[in-house]
Length: 546
Ligand code: NM2
Image (tube, rainbow, N blue to C red; front, top):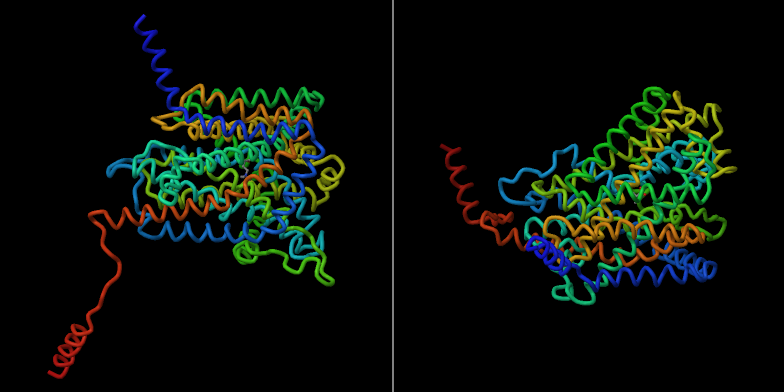
C-alpha cells in the first residue's frame, strides 16, 4: 500500500518538473501551423513558398556570414583559455569512451539523409554546377564531387557545435540542472530567461526541430520504401510508408525510453558498425582507386576554395547579361538553415554526453569527427555513383530525372556485388540512422519542456515527444503537405540565426567572467617596464665592454 502510494506521489512530484507553458506553447504553435496547412493546403503552400523565397533571397548573405563567423568563433574558443575549461569536476574522466561519444554525436546529428544526399547529391551538381560552369564538363564534375562535402563539412558542423558550448558549460561547470536553450541565454537576457521571452526561445527551437525532423522523414521514408520494394516486391504506397514510419517510431521510442546509457548508446554503436561495414564494402568492391583519387582531389579543391564557397552569393545575378542559377539559395543557404534548425538540439545532446571532456576536446571532436564521417559517406557512396555514370555502367542521371531520387539511390546500391545483401544492409542502416536521430531528438525535446532534468527526462515525456515527432509528419504525408512543413521549418528557423548569435555571446560572457574570477587565473598581458629594460641593456653593454 505504502509502496503504491509512494510510487504515485513520486509520479506527481515528477510531473511538477514539467514546464507546462513551454510544453503547451510548443504544441499550440505546431497546431497553429499544421491545422491551417491541413485545411488550406494550396494557399498554405503558396504562402510558405513565398516566405521561403523572400528569406533565402534577401537574407541568404546573412546565413553565409553567420556560418563563416561561427566557424572562426569556434576555432578561437578551442585555442584560447576558454577551451581548457573542463566540463565537470577536476578529476572526472569522460563519461563515454571516444568511440561511443563520436558514434552518439554523429548518429544524433546525422540521420538517414546522409545516405540519401551522400549517394545522390553529386548528380544534382553534375546537371546544375556552381560558379556558372557548363554542365557535364570535367570542371563541373570535379565540383559535383566536392560541393556535397562542403555542405556537410566544417562550417555545417560548427553550426551544430556552437549551441553545445553554453549548454555544456551551464550544465557541467555551473551545475544548473536545466537543459534548455533559454537557460543558455541567461547571461545575456538575465531574468527574461524565465519569462515569456525565454519560453518563446524554447518554443521556436522546438518548432524548428519538429519541422527539420519532418524534412528528414520526408526524404528518408520514400528511400526506405524503395529499398523494401526492391527487396520484397511490395508496392510503394501509403500503407508501406505508414508502416515504415510506425516501425521507425517504435524503434526510436524504445531506444529513447531506455535512455542515454542503454538504448541510445547501443543503437548508435550498432549504427556506426553497420555504416563502417557498408562503406568498407563499397570502397573495397567498388572502384577503390577512383574513389580514393576523387575524394582526395575534392578535399584539395575544397581547401583551396573554402572561402570562395562559403561566401559565394552569386552577386551579379539578373544584372545585365548574367543569368541567375539560384545555386547559393537552393543549396548552401538551404543547408545552413537546415543545420541551424537541428543545431540547438544537437548542441544540447552533445553537451549532455560530454561530461568529463574539456571544451576544446568537445569542440574539435565534434567538428573533426563530424566532418570526417561525412567525407567518408560522400567520398565513397557519392563517387561510387559518379563512377557508374562516367563509365556508362549505369545511367544514374537518367533514372534520377525519370523516376526520382529514391529510385536512383536504390538503383546505385543495386549495382554492387551481392546486391541483395547490400540492399538489405543499406535499408536497415537507413532505418537505424533515422531512429538514432529521432531517439535523441525526442530525448532533448522532453528535456526542454522540463524545469529541471535530474539525470534523464521523465519517461512518459520522452515517449510523448517520440510519437509527436512522427505523428505530425504522418498526417501531413497523407494530405500531401509534408514538403510545405519542411519549407515552413526552414522559414520558422530564421529567428534561430539571432538565437545562435546570442548563444555564442552568452557563453563568452559567462566563461570569461568565471575564468577571471577563478583562483589560478593569470592575466595574459605583460606590462613591460622601460626603466628596467634600459637598466638591463646598460648592464649588458658594460659587461661586453669589459
Ligand atoms: N542535416 C545534417 O536528416 C538528417 O540526416 C538529419 C540533416 C541537418 C543536414 C540532419
